[in-house]
Length: 107
Image (cartoon, helix red, strand yellow):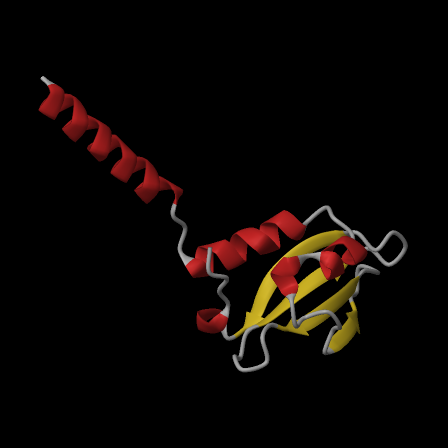
């Protein structure tokens, strides 16, 4: 009985660990989704976007918002963008612009 209990416990732990692990690319995309609704200032303070503090380009969108494009980790080609409300600096949308295969954050 003891062996069965231990085997079931070990199996449960392995299953929980497998469910909790996220792929690095998915982790990056989750970071973009998490940024929506926050301000640019909050994201500049975030550890998540180290190396991407200042935009490499800023574009005025037809809807009146601004799109800031950032280079993530200069040794890679990953570029991402935040669509920002120009008055409140709140992030309304986020997307990968270029180099999707290089957009990752190790969990």
